[in-house]
Image (cartoon, rainbow, N blue to C red; front, side):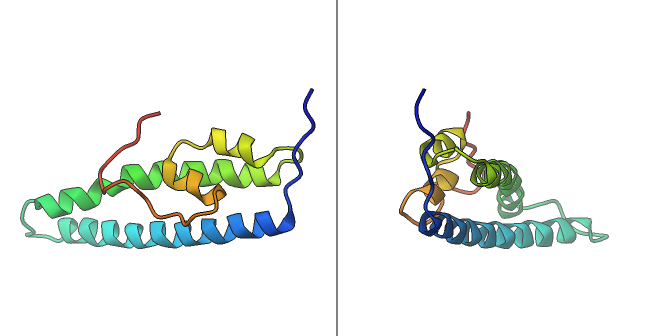
Amino acid sequence: MRQPEEIELSEIRRVLRNMADHLSELAGEVTDVSEVVSAMLTIGSSAPSETDIRELQKMDRLEQSLDDLARLSHGLATDGLGLQDMLTSLRLSATQRILQDTTAVPDTQAGHVELF
């Protein structure tokens, strides 16, 4: 049986900073999608444009990212769970990068869905 990996406080702080940056980005996307939905619900509005549809497709990424962030938060709160264990539980490359020593900039375009 392998020994659980201890996570250093500095590592937890780094991961939390990356999570905060990623959550801020997701919040901006929610604002974009909300504006499109509001415009679509306005009485007398025209059919959604291709740009509007691309904005609405961000909902898939938002849902998957939030699910991964919940998994990551649970992993940070679990004793004996190492960074590698948490990394393998995440589905999206953008959220996997939160654990790595890089920024959480997504490498997918709006509407692109990573299959898992």
